[in-house]
Image (cartoon, rainbow, N blue to C red; front, side):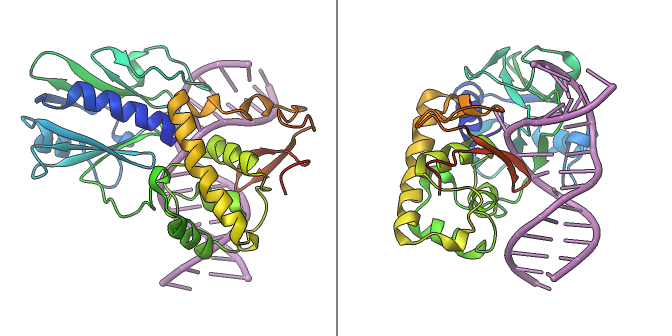
Length: 264
DNA sequence: CTTAATGTTGTCTG
DNA sequence: CCAGACAACATTAA
């Protein structure tokens, strides 16, 4: 469930349904899923007996705090196909490009609570991750609260890269992925291949407004796949705004759809 | 069977 | 050392 919008609904589900509950056991059957030095034994020792006190998010990263900010924190990343399940319930957003079936082998990480319930992270593609006490400084400012000054700094640092690559770089702006960036640039009328340094002041302001409004809109709609341009993401697809045939390219290493008629 | 998929990271190069 | 490009990672679904 990978972009900011889906990660936020996973965070909200965890906050509503796990805060205040005490961890009785940790299930981490897949060592490959534990990253940056995290081990199953380390997680078990750190988390057993702890009570969850808060669930935070920055970009696509979820942080779960235990015991009032003094206990350990663990990070959950949903990768390309990860999904959080609490007591058998998941967030309402649908997941495309991945199955929603509950195959036991896809439970890459889980917590059992003292009250008898459980949460787990299901990830068919196995590209998600669990990290104990993750560093929180590797991500840029979150896209939901991005200021114009922060956007300008991101553009300045990535001046010679395509604007799309800059917006997808999590160390510059956190939370935007392939679909969301295409939607934002489509709405802003900016060609995703333009080098970041070529945006003038007016375009920077317009882009900043569009990032914030688009993220807000899709949070409200409940999924990045509910954007207006998504239906045109197919070979031969037409721009919903002006009917031109969409252009398909690879930019920043990802499949990119844009409208040659109104994105410049 | 082939291709592509909402992502991150390590490696190579300039 | 910094930016940028790209392959690799693992697995499923169309």
